Image (cartoon, rainbow, N blue to C red):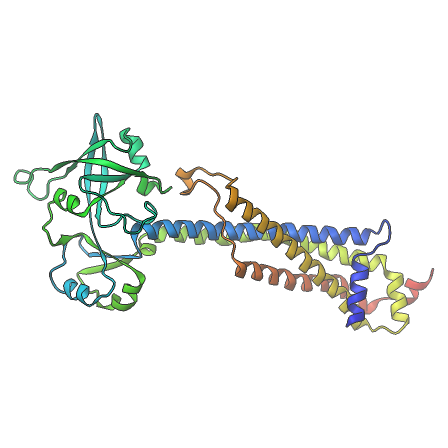
Length: 388
């Protein structure tokens, strides 16, 4: 085995001046490294895109929400919600959500008001950050439409509920305390946060009524089975299931297209080993005449394919890691946030995916090595040594 390994390295990296087989070997390594780099970057971008979207959505929506199946307000003092809250160690956050009209001067827009106790962590780094009374937090898209800035005052008008003649709309002046940018148009252009009591007053709800409850994963694991009709539990991933189906739909075609680049490297591998066999035919003949078996000869060239695949995979992984590090550190590759939900290309390095790609490259390198060596059993020693 040691002799086969030594001969494989010697044949692969020949020091002979003008050796085309050695040049072809380096071309194969370069082709594989480019293919692995493309695959790694593609996988990292897809994973990074999914991670960024997941983090943003889970931050704004919470892990899951309990609401009435018909969209009616929930009275938290009534059963079974009251007993659920008493038994839980992790109290859910209440929220009130409704559609209102927001006005500033001559500008008016429809807005989705959400009354909460604490701001989402994507807006405030402090997880216990509360909204002060008579204040509002809105997205930058909505702020641009209304031509307002932090510190300005807005007028929020609710829509009358039930009989239009008996119920008049409520209007409240709120000061803009913060303008956030999530990169998600769905939130930046339509969503505004207020204090829970302000939203309750605007939407004409009773003191014990809320639109629903925001719960975490620990609460879900313990009490999910106790949530019965007419209440409905929906996770953030279920609410945005179409978006994640679209991501999964794009995943495999992207892998396939960039995998073709790695396939070119495997073709170069086949060509390089075939070239080595042709160029070293006299040396192969000498080895066979000195008693080396054809099985050992096949092992030599298969080891060459393993070397090419391993070195190409490592170089590709190194190049992709450097590119990922540079992008995460300096954010060189920018993209329009209004289209892609973020302002720069996201990367997420996954060592598990890298090991899978490297393992597949090694496997296909071994399989590709069999193509040029399968005819070694018919190798003619006399023809190879005729002019030696």
